[in-house]
Image 1 (cartoon, rainbow, N blue to C red):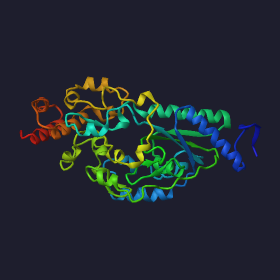
Image 2: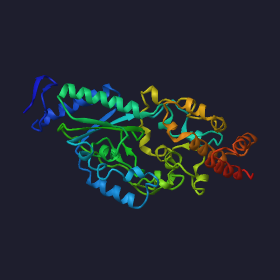
Image 3: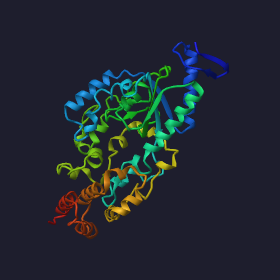
Image 4: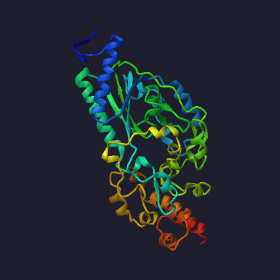
Length: 371
């Protein structure tokens, strides 16, 4: 056995083996949890690499075409559901949680009810979480390597073929709710996930039980009825997919249902009873920038591309590009209450150079009785 107690709660580890006692395993986990909190994570769990149940679910989901144009979901062969194939030698996956709920932001339902304003998913109000999370994960892994001995590892944050929700569920970070988001009884669902694939034989944490019960609030609230059954989301109907992942024309049948949602949709989370326990973020980078928690649609629509790129530097919104930004806002303006300001803003872009933008502007004007 290569673990030996040097002092209370202190280990000297030349290389971990699986021959640790339950007490020693818990002490190792407690230390890793403390290190995780010290770099800004609010929760952590450890799972093995057996994802056969998630693999069956993924294959069935893909077979129904629910992924739409997200071709990356069916690439990479079996690497998505076999962590040891993506990173050779992986024995354990450490899943972490980082809260993003911006407690000081404008009240979401009030924004959604004001047709002059645009709604941006609460996770995207501040800076892009990818770089921040990856840096923190790297710091955690480096701390582990320093304290626990040499290890092979790789960190991920929504950046590779990783079944992050299934892994988080196995690790006990939460359970996958009927809306397909990971839920915690103590923390709701407003958190990002990140992973460390490692070859250390760490002790496993216990998976939690599901607590959605008979609740169907998320299914009932979905504006486009994208949650076609409990735990099944047809991305092709989902407003988050339509405004973020889809690069072409938004199907006309869904445009009226989108309301003023211009980047993502949080309805299924906003209505979830467990989110009364959501924790406000302690990360300044996740707080609203550029007034995106309650922006005026016309103001955003009037941004030129240089302004779009400048104002949204470091924002996750930037990745959809200026053309899709205008497309989304045009739909929201089509759903807005008619006013001279709204109509004038649309008419100014009626002859936009982008075919995609023109199509959605023409549709929006038609909603106001103009051709």
